Amino acid sequence: MTRAISLHDVSKSYARGPRVVENLSLDIAPGEFLVLLGPSGCGKSTVLRMIAGLEDIDRGRLLLDGEYANDWQPSARDMAMVFQNFALYPSMTSRDNIGFPLRIEAPGADPRPRVDATARMLGIEDLLDRFPGQLSGGERQRVAMGRAIARHPSAFLMDEPLSNLDAKLRNHLRAEISRLTRELGVTTVYVTHDQSEAMSLGDRVAVLRGGVLQQVGHPREVYALPRNVFVAAFIGTPRINLLRGLVRAPLDGAMTVSLGKQFLRLPEPLSLDHQLLRVQQGREVIVGLRSEAVRIARHSAARPGEVPLTGLVEHVEFQGHETLVHFDTGSRPAVVPELESPRPAARPARRRRREAPGVLDRLRERAGALRAGPVVVLDHPADTEAEPAPPEGRLPGDLVVRTTPDIRLRHGMQVPLLVDLAHLFVFDQHGDRICPSPARLPDLEE
Ligand SMILES: Nc1ncnc2c1ncn2[C@@H]1O[C@H](COP(=O)(O)OP(=O)(O)OP(=O)(O)O)[C@@H](O)[C@H]1O
Ligand SMILES: [Mg+2]
Image (cartoon, rainbow, N blue to C red; front, side, top):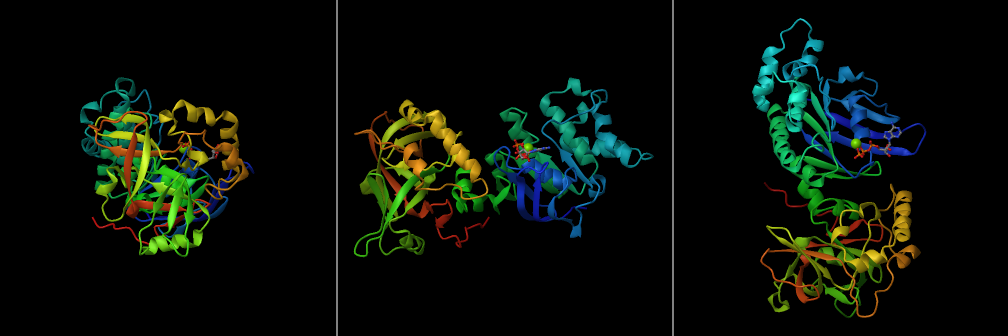
């Protein structure tokens, strides 16, 4: 049996502190693999523990197969949890560890057939007589999975089960978890802060920020149509380029989005999406360009829908199968304070100097105050301090472009770029997406 799990307006706080989960509503279908994704402290484990019955729900309702289940005992929920720090009994063999919950559940029954079948499924038959101390980390995690699976629970709740493992093993077990849960057809709620794990595993991904659900959808949907800057920036590698722009929509001329000294000229006739930008005339917006939205090419090679831009090479990051080129385009990057750590490595020294600790602290503080509110607010007096005018002759900017590994570029070169407007995201001052149109459905054909 596999469960439908529904949360309706669920809220939670600890010891009369602030809410760590706020009005969360989610419907998880039987057999679905749903990933809860978000940065550290956003409430992922709390949500999982409320579903498991290990934490009380302050407000709202949990329904299991449509039945009100807020006060059900954890054992009555028939769910198996797999944690990051999987604990096996050190004095028991793998066989006994896997069989232990079966013996508790049905004391008279012989657990061996189930244990053997589970071990076959996980490819750990030859590990059954070993003790945990004689297993590698990955093998131990597989035994822990076996213990969860053998019971044939109606749902799996997995809390960062792979984060203690090295990258190679993580990828391997990720594929195994995906195969196993699909084979078993059991509803799975999987918590992670790793967006690539979320994207590769989930039937749907639910993105949380400060205890508030930002968006839930198919991985391609949250990537292609992020509801706000936070989702756009949290999902995708390299991180989406976010630049501060200004919409200019004169009555008698072409509409443009200025990016510092340069601008993107929107082609006439305006597409429906670009018409939505007209009301932003004179306002600051956030332009989002994923690295595949920009290519290095002569301006004369522009295809329909591509507009020119020029970038100054700041840094070239060789990745083996591809190269990431960091450009200055003369625009100012938009800051999503909660997500500022993933990108600083490629920052040249002068940028680091500008982001003095006092400024970052202030931005983080502001982010804390706004956790459940807007993702980012432009035109705030503190922003002016955070982003002082660039020194004469310097072009600050922040645009990462993905290109082939054979590219020959040197620091300081001026390079022509083409921006594909079909991949242009525009977010309003509060970080909500206005372009492409929020109503547009992504193409999700298999
Ligand atoms: N037992 C507790 N008492 C008080 N506060 C708690 C308790 N457990 C969690 N919190 C707080 O609730 C918030 C959400 O915690 P939670 O463990 O759900 O986050 P998370 O998204 O799982 O983070 P991580 O990715 O770091 O595991 C955090 O601010 C945390 O400090
Ligand atoms: Mg957690």
